[in-house]
Image 1 (cartoon, helix red, strand yellow):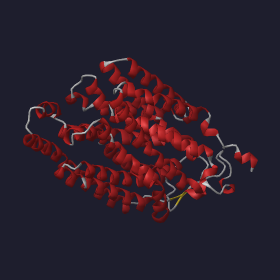
Image 2 (cartoon, helix red, strand yellow):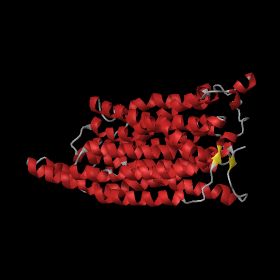
Image 3 (cartoon, helix red, strand yellow):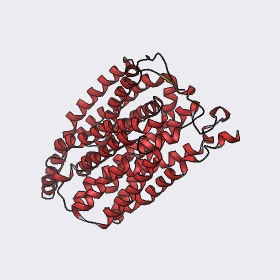
Length: 431
């Protein structure tokens, strides 16, 4: 079984307390990640971008997961979980700090670089924290623990767009109308004023992240020796395998997670612009991402209560895929607020996908857990590419028809829930 170094035999100190600490980290993930839903329309105005260009925000943030996924695994092998988490927080703080010169100079490339550095820090944090939560307890209830982490993430994700949106998009509709009548010099002044609105929020974010990094570093968070994970978990004896590529259920899980992260971010990051496309003012639409996150929270609560008591991780993933297809179809076939609500409800469909895919994918990896987690974290780059594709389709067709692209993604996720996660797990009987 998995061992926790220097862990107290008391359940509260050996499991609950570490999970509470990781819950704080998941709150940070959610807060920093979902700020991008406000940054996309904000930078579209401040830096005068089209849809495709504005979705480079998501690309710059999430492509770091692909580029830095394997190096994050190397870092954690050298530092361990706790020190690696502190390094990750400091990197997120550095990326946040870069927003200040970016805003002062209204330089879009600097904003994108800051987002890339933030994503790099979160890559380290995700690589450490997700297997930590999965391994620290019975595998049958892993989705329930990750659902609890999802609540921490979702609460932050629901709060973050409201806070930042109130600061930087409070008069966005009036500004867009006013820009049409300003001369070039006045327009530059107005856009510079808008760009500078992010300076104070990101100074505060940077300071909080540095303090949290110090707290994590000096905390009593225990290390986990995942190499001693039970090798009889159904994926075959991991000692008989010499490469991570001998775990086909993991490799397919990486692709499925790639699709999932893409459709999740599309639902959260596109809904503000989609509300405007449907004729709703930005003063109201700026809150729509929070509605998506609230529907995700509802799903997480269902997971905490019901998994594994009433249904399994596999069945949760099956139902989630079906709901994703249903709400995507309804979003395309309806109009106005009804269509926007269907996009928000994609949050409910997406909520139990991450908690279900992750434990199914890393089951039985044993000593390959860190590298497997690195590959899964690299799959988060789906959130870089698929939203960019959505932005391109939105420019070429329209924002509504572009949602058709998520339907085949949900179909593949459904396949993984039904049978894909079982591929290669009978290898044990052949070894």
